[in-house]
Length: 342
Image 1 (cartoon, rainbow, N blue to C red):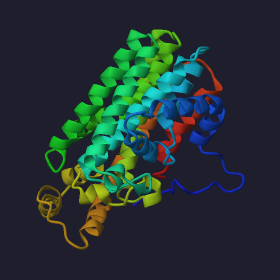
Image 2 (image 1 turned 135 degrees about the vertical axis):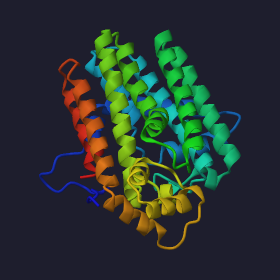
Image 3 (image 1 turned 30 degrees about the horizontal axis):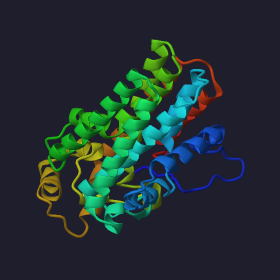
C-alpha cells in the first residue's frame, strides 16, 4: 500500500505551507466576517440547544474549505461587494447541516476528532438542528437578492439529499459499480464544492465560461477529495480523517477501493467480500485481510490514479479563469487533496 502523508503533520523549515493555510491567510478579513455572521445566525432566542449543538461542530476546528472556495471564486472574478460573505456562510451552514444528519444516519461516534453531536446530545437534536441550519442557509440566500444563486444552492441541497439516499441503497451491495459510486460522490460531496465555487462567479457577474470553469473545478475537486477520503479510511490516521480508521469497512460501505477489489476478485476473494460487506459477518483480522486484498488486486493503486486524474481535471478547469494569485492557490489545493495519498 502507498504511504500516507498525515494531514496533521507540520511542515519542516523550508517546506511549503499547505494551500488551505495560504488560502485562509489571503482571505483572513473575509473569513472573519463569515465567522461573525455564522455565530450571529446560528443563535436562537427560544431554543438554546441550537447554538450549543451548532457550536460544537462549527467551532470544532474545521478548515472552512467550502466557504473559502466561494470567497476565492468571487475574488478571482473581481467581485467588489459583500454578498459573497453571506454566500460563504450559507455554504458552511449547508455543510454543517449535512454533517449533523450524516452522523445520525451513519451512527457515527466521532467527527473532526471529537464526539459527534448525536452522541453528546441525541439523534433528535442533531436532526432538528440540522433542519434549522438548512432554513438559516435559505434565509441568507434570499438576502443576496439573486434568483440564480438561490437556484444553484437549492439544487445543490436537493442533490446532496438525493446522493445520501442513493448511498443508503448502494451501501452493502456489491453490485454497486463505479458509475453509481460516482453519482453518490457527486451528490454527497462534489455538489456542494461545485455550488460553492459557482455562486462565487455568479455573484461577481462573471462571464458564463468563467462560471462554468468554476463549476467544473469544484466538481472535480470534490470528487478527488472524496476518493482520497475513502482511500484514507483504509490507510490514514484517525487525526487525518477525523474519524476512526476502518470505519467505512465496519459500516460495510462500498467505496471505490472495494468496488475495484471486488471487480478483480477471485471466487474465494469475492466470498470474503460478500461475508464482510453484504452479510455483515466481520471477524477478528478481517480488516487486515481486506487491506491485503486491496493492495494485491491493485485496487488502491487504481483508485489513487482516479483521484489524481480528477485533481488534474480541477487544475485544468482553472486555466479558463482570469489570472489571479488565488487561482494558483486553488490549483495547489487540488494537488494537496491527493498528495495525502502520495
